[in-house]
Every structure is written in C-alpha cells, then in structure tokens.
Length: 87
Image (cartoon, rainbow, N blue to C red; front, side, top):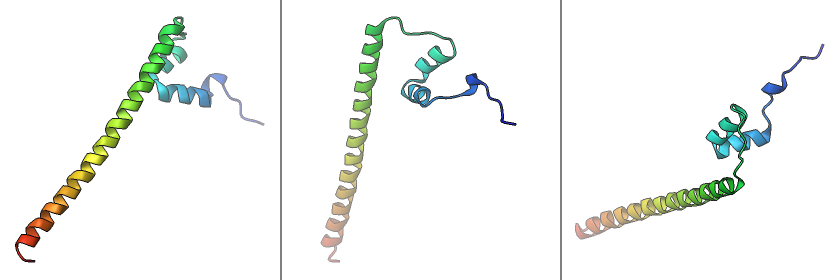
C-alpha cells in the first residue's frame, strides 16, 4: 500500500529559492498568503537586494585582499628583522 502524503507538506525547489532569496517574503507569501500587489516596489526591492549582494561580495573580496597584504607585510617585516640581525 503506497504511503499517503499531504500536498501542504511538499516543498518545491522554487519555494526553497524564494526562501533563500528573502525569508521574510517567503513567510509572507507562504504562511500569511500575501502576494505583492505593487510590482514596481517588488522590482525595486529585487534590484536593491541585488545591489546589496554585489556590495557584500565586493567587501568580502577586499577583506581577503587586505588579509593577504597584511600577511605579506608581516613576512617582509620578519625578513627585514632577520636580515638586520645577520641571520
């Protein structure tokens, strides 16, 4: 006998993507049943999130670069100290 299932318990891939993009929007749509009436505001919000994502990615890249440069500076400082001590 096949197991029965409830359609309410099925989680679709598009819902996972929606949740990962914006948990609050997913909750409003899936739990409270709200739908975005203002498409202009929806597009503006989507563009804002895309810009924010790019800014965060850029900040993370610059942080990695700064760590690499600090490591390089530390290594050069150690070499200078060792070189001046005659080692």
